[in-house]
Length: 281
Image (cartoon, rainbow, N blue to C red; front, side):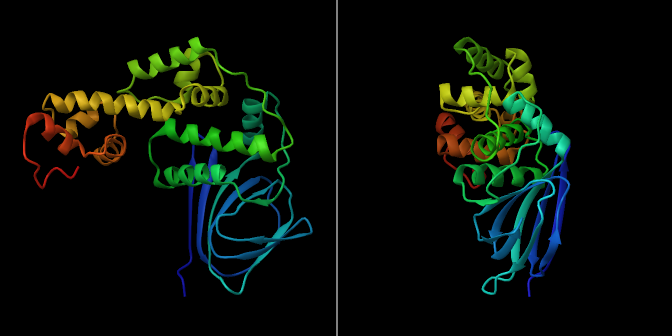
């Protein structure tokens, strides 16, 4: 018998509610919401009836309920326990997202209700994890938010994306801003105000022209600065803070991923020290 748990987090910056249901076996009777629900099935199988259509939910499936979509679901006999993640998005917030992405304030109708999309699924899972952990990395959260909803609007909504691509000079100015403020807390608003573009345009054009998202670019700049500090003999914990990382664990993870070494091991190469048991960070 699995333990039933329900966890909810509200993100003030993104204006949405994230929730996690785990260990659920009971059916959900017919009902509807007056807001949008975007969900992801981690494990378990369900038989879903939505607006009269019989659908099957399996691990890896994404689903979207539009406001007033009538739906109900029951457990499939082979996998009774459900692990399900979701976002609740109020209609007013969806209108704001629509305006940002399409230039039109409207309430889109998403179809189909259930689908598989690896790109959207990966963005969903990372965004959900950051919100549930209450991580303060606002730039990465906003970036994932717009990557996810640009994908959803582009493929599954009855609207079209209208944002214009950025000029090369705007991309250059955005890069210069990230480089000169790398040690500070940066949000998408900060960058967009500097180059006078929308968030969705910034993310799409930045990634298309450079092959990196703004957040990935920022992480590369911070690691480069941290390498300079480490070569100077500054301890990794101080190098992390001086280069803009909020905590040492995140610093070590990003540094290792981009260089293949821990910060301590990297520093030892330049200080000609033998690795010690304290070089794991």
